[in-house]
Every structure is written in C-alpha cells, then in structure tokens.
Amino acid sequence: MPLVTIIIPIYNTKKYLRQCLKSVVSQTYANIEIIIINDASTDNSLAIIKKYMKYYPNIILINNDKNIGVSASRNIGLNLSKGDYIYFLDSDDYIQKNAIEKMVTLARKYNCSLVEASYKKVITNHTRKRKSISESILINVNENKDFIQNHLGMVWNKLYKKELIQNLRFPKNLRYEDNAFIYPLLTKTDKVVVTTEVLYFYRIHLKSFMLKASLIPNNTIMDLYKIANMIKKRCVQLGTYKKYQDTIDYIIQEKTFDAMLQSSTWIKISHRDKKKLITALYSYNKEHYNMPEIKKTNYIENRIPKHKRMIQIKKYWLLHYIDDTINKSENYETAINNILSKYKR
Image (cartoon, rainbow, N blue to C red):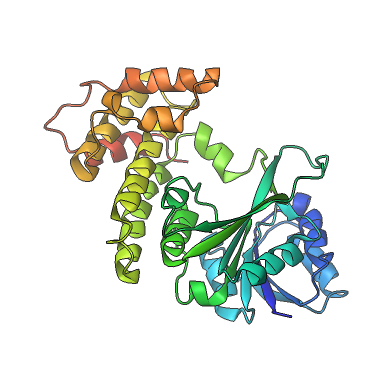
C-alpha cells in the first residue's frame, strides 16, 4: 500500500480547521502521513492541531516562528514528505472520507502520475453532500493539449506521484502561486485520470484571498505577470516548452488578460483610476505579451459565459475602460504601480 503525504499549511483558520482535520483523519485509506505547517497562527489553530495530535500519531507538526506564506509552507511539506504520492489540502477546505482511497486506486489502475477529482464550492459552514456520479476519464495529454489550456490552475483536488514533482517547488512571496506549479507539471505528464466524483470541498468566505482579490484593489495583480513568465521559464527548463509552445503562450496571454478582467471588478477604486489602470494594463500586455486587439480576439468570449448577465456587464465595462486615457509616451509599468500604490492596503 503506497504511502500518501497530505500537506496542509495553516494560518488563522480556527473556524474551519476542525472540519478540515476531521476529514483527513477519517480517511478510509490507512497509509497516510499528515504534514501540518502552522504558519505562525495567532488564533487558536495551534491548540486545535495539538488536540488532534494526541489521538493521531501520523500527524507531523511544523511550527513556523514567523509567517512565511503558503508557498514556503508547502515547500517545507514537500521537503519533509516521505510519501509515494502527494496531496495538497487548504486548511479552510475539506475532503470526502474516501478521497485518498479513490484517487490512489485510480492512479494505480491507470498507471498515471496525476489524478484529478471534481470539487464543489462551499459558501456556508456545511453543504449537503449529494452523491455524485463516479466516472473516470483517462486523458492522454500529448494528444489533448486543450486539457492544459483549459485547466483552471489549482493544485488542490489532485493526487501527484512524488516522482512527477521531483525538485519543482512553489514560488515564494507571489500570489497565484498554484499556476507556476501545476502548468509545468501538466506538460511533464503523459496522461491524467479525471474523476467526475466530487471529492474536494472548496470553501468561499469573506477572508478568502480569491474573494478579496476579485473585489478590492491590490498590487498583487502584477504577480500574474511574474507567474506568467515563470510558467514559460519552467517549461523551458523541463524541456517541454517547444512541444507545448502554442498552449503555454495561450495560457500566458490568458493570465495577463485575467489581470484586466479582475481589475475591472474592483469596487473600492475611483472610476478615473480604474479606467487609467485597465488602459495601462492593456497597453502593457500588447507591448510585452503580444496581446492582439482586445475587441477582435476571442479571449473575452472564451473567458466570459454569454448566459451570465453580471459577467456580461463586467465585459461591457472592461471594453469601455480601454481607450487612450494613458499618454502613449508614459511608462506603462510605472503608471500601473503609481495607481495601485494609492490603494495599497
């Protein structure tokens, strides 16, 4: 029975931590080590962890003296892991009790290094767990490059063979770090098994980063450009960029387009600054990432479902903001940073 390492970075999630840990220690799969990295939590998280450690000797606790972030914490877990397989779990989320057993079974059945499960978004503390249809699909990545191109870029809800990861680690002190990890791995593996069964529950709450990032101005939006560059660099290092060049270039352009789309949803920014910011981002994208004329490209239609009225409104405003507000002689990156600095939290 292969050993599975579950890596859980924790920072101030006491409200949801018991449900997360209970879902892990209740797994039907027996051969598991649980590496918990307490990232200098200031709430009651550490006491909750220690209580579970009394009853479950397979829990390994690492206590960070200072807060170093989710990427560095996950890297600590990877460096300490002894498992044949790796699984990442966020401390405000939880998993089905048969998640690990199901995914290990699929990995061994199809002899593949990556298994991906379906997930469900959770807005309240609990959600009704309807039984989902269990159907497994084997995807040959070499023949189906669209799988990489259409991937959302999360590292959770997946089981990885450790030898697939090798020395790849998460970038420190950058947001959207999952993207720089998962896309290079997807170009490295030949086949992926995807199960339609819901095994992961992803919680959305007021303190979650992704919710804040979609509403509140933040200068971490520029991290998307650093991550985009890192995706390409890592694929070059792995020797997979030439094979997947069109796919990776599309992903990079889509990520840089995300910076504009996300900025258009911010509510705590003046109309004038938002207009200038999105225009500067668009000009920066065209200059550095060969983004075509936005109104002539299919990026908007691909990223925004036609049937969602609110998102269509965001599309309208995004197109409305793109004009000649920024002086063409101005340095776009300087203009972007100047605007964002006004709203730095």
